[in-house]
Length: 466
Image 1: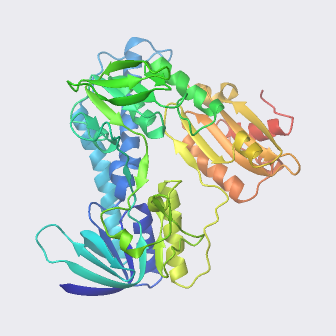
Image 2 (image 1 turned 90 degrees about the vertical axis):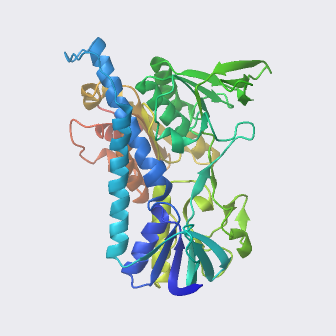
Image 3 (image 1 turned 60 degrees about the vertical axis):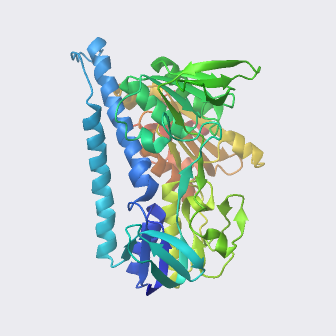
């Protein structure tokens, strides 16, 4: 067995792993990265990027269908149709371009990339097998960085296979199912369920809790629920799935009263969450401290073993690519001798439903639960000129600030394209803005961002346009 030595061994080539490897190499650390599948991880290959591509294609098709019926803009088209195979090829082309870019960046920065599956032997050693009949490679390191990501959660009563799919298969459809049942009304289920509905499928969503998007407060979730109803998506809330029927063409569902019924389904998308990927690669040999299924880390991403680090989804919530990237960059700099701690003031969360949702910092209920006396104010997009020109005046921007000193502790928004406001929201909280700072900043007109200024003005008691 060949043996290779390196200063830093990164297991996992997703956003956290590849960013850590690039930054470490830039700082002069000999770095080796091991990835068993494709560079870019879940995010680039079967998550963030392909899902947004499919969502965009679905939006454009739905818009064309709308114009085929009636358009206040005076635009008329005839008999729009979608070539799903071409859509998938377009989506795959974006993924290929981005993953190729990651590979080029790693090569440019002289990161040694090893294709294969790593298995941990101890805190300083891992063995990598390619699965292609080649001999295993042993890699010895000074620092070990764990970045294996996460995997979709399967239901015991409905394991993946056949007509039961995860988000991975949903992002590469060979054909559009006539009837799709989505299990789980979280952001993954609703993003993909909405896209499939816009592409023409009949979509039914089953959620065990009593409302859609249960991780978001009710004011934010209501516009999304209203949009789902307009699109014709059927929602069954407070219901649980019991599995497929005997013929496999329907989902057995039980409501809160214990009554059972069957939902016809050509395909079932199970989107009930993701788990840290901790099994099958020898992690248990390290006997690390754990928080349930997740690896326990401190504010420098150190695990309970010296010089073993962990970042991203394997460390638990929030499972967000941008969190993993920030952690990876930090770990590389700490190993290089710099003083860093992972203490962000806020991490933005975006839901690409229709309309989109953004949450940064504390919501009003969270602020109250934390014992903060806060004021909050929202500015509706119905009073925003740019939203009107985009034919999307539903939704709002909301600010949450301490009552005593007006320090902003949270921003939320729901509406078309509000994902692009997330940077301003995060920057505002990270820099310690007060309501007066935002209200006194000149915002370009006409933009959706004007609603940010107006929300701050309203919180101060002198909104101008509502």
